[in-house]
Length: 418
Image (cartoon, helix red, strand yellow):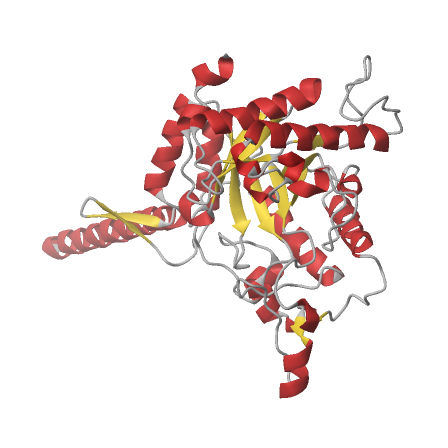
């Protein structure tokens, strides 16, 4: 009998230890899964499924964002790559770069991370390039890096396929086949109808989710009508062709501001919007953005200006002159828009302070070889042109490189301090 009691107690103890171990293992496993990886045989194994339980609250926005933003563009795939993050870390440590512009939704239309936006989930419009968005934002914020999320708005093949009734279609092929055929530009990419409020709301929902995950700012790109492709066959399911394209885009600007009130927003415009007074057939008028965004970001890449602009046979070889003229002209137009008089084009007005409640300029600058081999001196010339043009209104710049590798010699701490 004594042996039975002892044996029974031993079995109970053994079972209790087993149960406790199982519970502890499960809790540890849940915690590890929430981090989306496991350590097995000293190797990191990433999990394909979403976390079973949240590991922590989403990150907050950067507590003290920099007044002067010096950013680089990063694709979602680069941002999700550990080796590239090591490259970025070195860039932050050795240069004046203090911000990144990360693709949330790129030209493919796929969202880079597991977004909570309803339609992204409904149609599975995610490529999971960034596996853990909260960890990424927290990693950057811990380095005091300002995080901007870029959204390609109307160029969006993924949502066009999911919601073809909202997409631009090919009138001729649709008539020939008797079924809807999506129109495509020269890059074989589909577009959404810029007049569709459903499309507007979809992009706002993606932006809201990004802000929930701690992004400091949202940058809207491809906010325009298509500019290339077979324009003769282009058909719009929503736009009636009567309302001016610039009015359609302006209404989108207003809609975004209303839907994201109180948030930091920026918009990318063609560089030529700084000097052209028409909408260039794409609906972009720079004045229409001034009241709706914190930053207007004209893409003043010298290589994108036509030969002969400002009398230069190859504008790409004259980065300082092209950027300074473009930004100075944009600033003059902003002063006119604000109701102030300008005695002469491109000349500063003594005693006139920064305009209140209007966008600041923070342009995209070229850091890639096109039209010319872009050296550190050429990139520095662009940056100097922005500083010289804006003076007290200088708010920084953003560098664009398709490779996501940047000319460090142009932005070294010692270089920009001179």
